Structure formats: C-alpha cells, structure tokens
Length: 104
Image 1 (tube, rainbow, N blue to C red):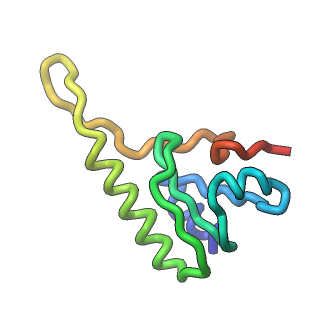
Image 2: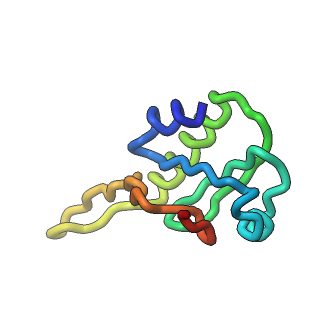
C-alpha cells in the first residue's frame, strides 16, 4: 500500500519507512506508541502524527488535505511588479529522512 501511495503522490510527498527497532531513541523522541505510525512533515516540521492500520483512501485524504493546506499558505511572490503563484509543493530531496533518523 505505501509503495502505491508513494508512486501515486511522487510529486507531492516522499514516503519513508523507519525501522523503529533500529531507531528506538528516535521512536521515543517522536512519541511513537503504535505500529504503523504515520508522520506528515512540511519544510522539516511535523504537521501530524497518527497510528493504526488505516485504509489507503484514508491516508490519501490526509496527503491531499496537507498538500492543499501547504499550497494555500505559500502565497504569491512579486516578480517585476506582478504577482506570480509560488510553487506550493516542492519535491522532497531524495536523501531526506525524518529528523533524528540516520541511514545505515
């Protein structure tokens, strides 16, 4: 399911799996109490966390809602006296991981 969501939303999100048994300290810091736990970040800030086995449609709605919220708060920039929309959804860097998680 996560692979499908990642592929479908590649222009909006980057889905990262973290093995909490290997990153116990991080899991404690992040208040991970159940598996699976989902965290949604924007610009390095955690927007939401929820845990449990939810249907794919539920998670897709969360992705869409947060993508919309980010888009609506980005605003506009002025170029040469004219307002131009700011790209609201920026691709995640390929090497991004949640704060405190390191790659082996």
